[in-house]
Length: 186
Image (cartoon, rainbow, N blue to C red; front, side, top):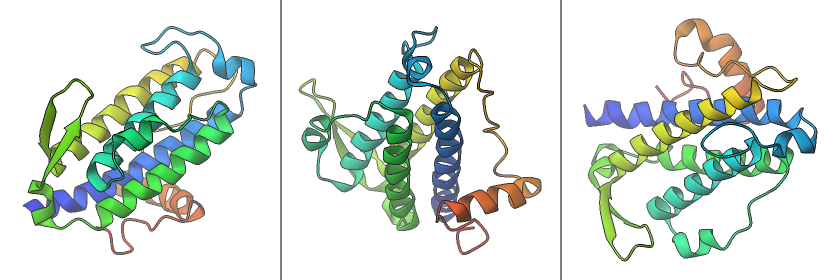
């Protein structure tokens, strides 16, 4: 069962990159003012929502792999949709590489998370990855809803895991330089 979970995380990492790229492309079609415009959601704009996703992904990857959160917290976040999309894809590729390197025992490894409140939280790799993927879906959904209030139609983000999705999914993953599920991932 743990190996099946490691395989699932590899698939989720790919779905994550695919969904982020689709959303980033749609946002890049907006003019800069529309991308930064105040909207109704948890974060007040598409830009701030995508910046949050990138920031949190980088922080959890730092927890999982190093160099540590202090370094990540000092990095400026991109302002434009194109720059954010490129930075997110680079981070997504790092997350895929991390997940591809997992084996069953890795999932139980304890990682210390510094939330800058003076408490060192201890979580398993499995729990952190589960959280990261749910966090992504949550905030991408908010961005998707905000995008629906613009002239750019929101992209399809929920067709990835089924066999009927394979042709479109696999072509897009190959275009991103990411191996597809049936090429040694599943």
